[in-house]
Each structure stands twice: as structure tokens, then as C-alpha cells.
Image (tube, rainbow, N blue to C red; front, side, top):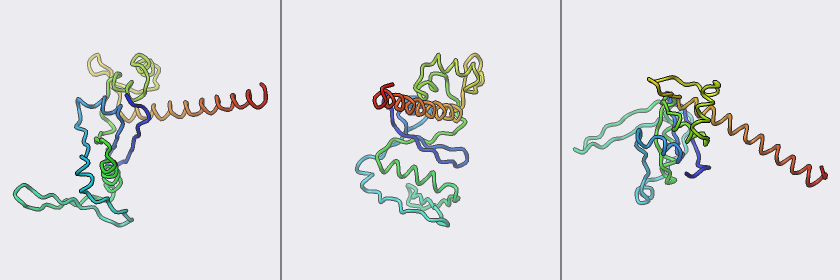
Amino acid sequence: MERGGYFSYCSYERLALYTWSEVFAMTSHVLQFTKLSDRDRKAVAPMPNLAEGDQLELRIRREGGQLQTLSLPASALAPVEALLDHLLRGKRVAVLTEDQELSPTDASTILGISRPLVVLRMDRGDLPFRYVGKHRRAKLKDVLALKAKLDARQKSLDALAEDTEDLIVNHGL
């Protein structure tokens, strides 16, 4: 699987927008991912920059030609804007809830570590989980929080390794 994809999070009633290829693999049995065709992307005008106080309305044209307008609250602007931005850039997107439960295998896909290491992190208390029968389940938001923590730790280790290499090369240590 491709690493280095990106992830976007916009809070709106505990919804999150993700475009990770790992999340696709994890949720392909649960969610429908969507991507606009090149023709559709070219036909859609880019969304204008929104300012404070702008209101978002969604117009739906029914099969019979009836128009229906849905007014969205201001808190929905950021997630809708992010969704449209990703779609217009040709990214595959899905909307997930933060409290969606994942198996250790699904969590390992997101975290980039093996399933046994995920189970170890669960047992050590690093990743909260609950049992559903005999099966462990962790919430997506907890998995993403652990991923952020692991990514920060890895960034620190990379900086330390770079500093060590600098000391060796430039100072003969």
C-alpha cells in the first residue's frame, strides 16, 4: 500500500473526512469511496473562498425536476469545503465517524505496524479498546490519536539521528 498519503480532519458533529489509501483498505467493506471522473471535475466550477457569515445551501434537483434546498449550518462549511476540494483534486474520499470501531487488523493498516503490535499496545493501555464477544475493537479516533503520537515520536527520532550524523560528520565524534 502507498504510504505518505494524506489525511484531512474537519470536525462537524464528530465526522471526519479521510483520503488515505490505508483507510480505503480498512473500510472498503463498510463504506463507499467516491471519486469524480475527469469529465465531472472539469464540469464543476471551483468552490469560491468562503468568508465569515457566508451560508451554505445545497440545491437538489429531483428526477421529476423538483428543486429542494437544504440549508447547512455554519459549522458544516469547513467539512463540505474540504470534501469538495479533495474531490476536485481527483482524490478518493469517504466520510467516517470518529467513533467507528476497528479491528486490530484494520488499526494495524492505519498505524503501519503489525497486528500483534497493535494487540500489545491495546494490552499496555496505549490504545483503548473494548471486546465485542471475543473480538477487540478500537475507535477510529483513538487509533488516529495513537498514530499522531507515533508519528511525533518518529519525527523526534529522525531529528535525533540527523543531529547524531551531523556530530559524526562535522565534529568527528
